[in-house]
Amino acid sequence: MAAISWEIPYPSCLVFHNGCRGRFTGVFASAAAMRRHLYKTSVLVIGGGVTGTGLARDLALRGIPSVLVEKRDINAGASGGNHGLLHSGARYIFSDPAAASECRRESLLLKKLAPHCIEDTGGLFIAVAGDDENYIAAFPDLCSRSGVPVEELSVEEARCREPALSSRVIAAFAVDDATIDPFKISLENIAHAQRLGCRLLRFHQVTGFQTRGRRIIAVHLLNKATRQEAVVEAEVVVNAAGSWAGSVAAMAGAEIPIVFSKGTLLVSQDRYAQRVINRLRRPTDGDIVVPGGTVSILGTTSERVTSPDVIYPEVHEVDLIINESAEMIPSLANARYIRAYCGVRPLIGRQDTGDDRNVSRGYELFDHNEGADPIENFVSITGGKLTTYRLMAEKAADVVCRRLGSCRPCRTDVDPLPDTVNARWTEPGLAPSNWFHRNDPDDTLLCECEMVPRSVVDSIVKSLRRRAGAPSMKSIGLRSRIGKGPCQGTFCSQRVTAYLYDRKVLKGSQGLDELRAFLRERWRGQHPLLWDVSLAQGEMLEAMHCGLHGLELTDESPSEASPPSSDKHPDPVDVKGQQDGSH
Image (cartoon, rainbow, N blue to C red; front, side, top):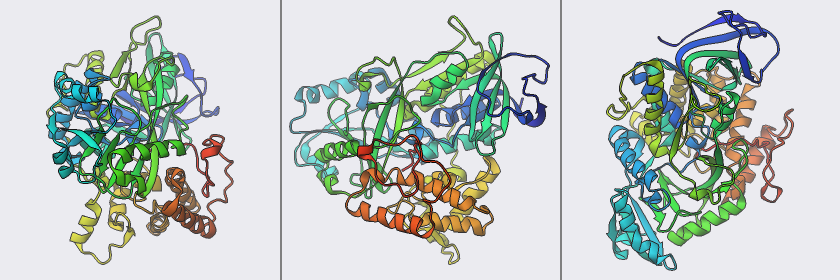
């Protein structure tokens, strides 16, 4: 049955349309009785990261209707706050051999089925003088045990392939690492799912569950843009909320033990290597440099945090990453960095676990139809890696099918992921190439750093309106390269805002609100890097957007959640504590 929606009067006493009362767990967004949207579907997927969007597509290919709800936008959590590494598996051969083998198998599948989302760069593991020689000697055998191909190289051959490598390199091995565009892969998945009948509800937050007996009969949502409430009635509910999976499960009366591990990464202005460069040692901080289009992404750290909601890149993490990365590529010590960002890994484990890097990177599927207080139509899937998202979605969909009595097989392991227009503009270099070939003098460039013309903005606005609701500056930035170049939105943000006014997309004071929200996300990745050229860039941003537009003048109260005072810099646009992994 296809997902359908209509509006019905919905009294605050929680009497459903069939007259049945049930137990409600959660918090009401408002007390007044009002008209609420009601959606009926076979499956509700909670979470718009790569696993949730992959699951929506998997279900759609099996002919099973679904609604996907996301409290912010696509990839707002860890799926957007990573380094975009498509693992060969070599990184986990010591700490998690099972995850290494899974990564190897899934990497091969994705390279075959979604090549337009992947740059098959290859990778190097290199050791420098002083690294553990016992681990270096054991590396090839450990790879072999996990089925991970590896080729030993001479130091001369390694430096011939990557001239920027340190002269202190003492050992090198080639592996099959690659890079993947995490935004493109998620946007492609949800675009295909929508084409097959899935419904996407962005900016809809789960506020509670209505249960009767051992079943969830309705899920309550709050539209964060309109403040309207909505209700979804689904036969099966799947919790794919990543780092928020524990809090979503708790609203349904279930428990998921999750460790929150924050990882910070840096984006350089230039690309310093053609391949993924890994430090040949057990995984630790600052041991990987990943090429990302025209830039390099350096990472990462692993710091325990108590919540995934308020996280910041911090100065001590920035210093550590640069110092460690420069051991592999010395020129990174004096590189210009345009952004820092972070994400939270949802690791399955208890809070008393020791080093977070010893917690498994594998995924876990929770069937909540077990235990002392079972819920027979509730499933959770969390943990895992970007590389293994397809497998995670498949396993969750298998459980859903059993609940629905369907025997339709998975198709995502054989059907290529379509290359759609909706997701194309996240690819570095595509917008300028398209602009040059069109040679249209009227197609004005709105973002000069990444050469994004107004035709790209028009395309994204049209796509958002057709499939996912009202466009915004942040949603346009997520789906394009706008704001991701060296100026980090200093110039293009106001150009795009003005253009959206001209096109009647923005009205009234909405433009200033959109501009302020867009720059918050850009600024919070800049302030840990305020030195040298970046400091001058920050001063220019403040002069333009505060001196000219007065963006610091707002009725909003200061954020209660701010970074530690020792790492905090003056914030001209009132930075809020929300995670943003886009780079």
